[in-house]
Image 1: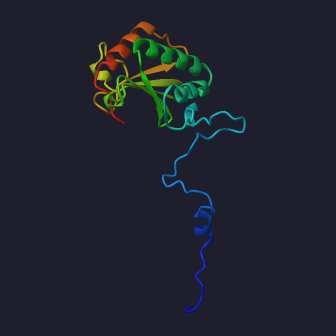
Image 2 (image 1 turned 60 degrees about the vertical axis):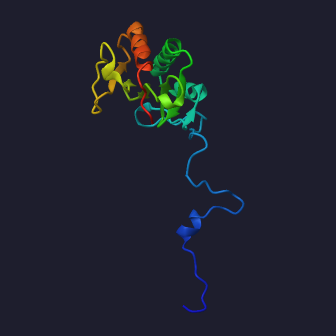
Length: 173
């Protein structure tokens, strides 16, 4: 082998970044993947794949990509949270909208996620809410509200939970 030039395997050569192109050390996407029609990709259960970002715009992109009846419910939830908590912070993390009160140090109080047949709303300190939301969790303080297509949606109760949740210490993520 002396005097021979080492040969890179084709596998290693494929991994090397092209010349003049900066490598992305964290391997993070700049934008969410889209379908051929230009719409966000729907993950299993119809949950929209939206890139991690902070602010109202990514949350609105998530809601716009929610399939079928879930989009209307998503708009109602977002409007209720925005009315109940003036200055609410919004973000999309892990392909789910998050809502927080106050500055970033106060964490997040609510999140939602699309599943095949329902929307799951997570109250991170839900065990402290009165009345306690009905869905239990493996995590002691978390409670869920599952919203199905034909379920009645009690906006007054939901807004009361949101107000209470926004006044509790948030979950830092």
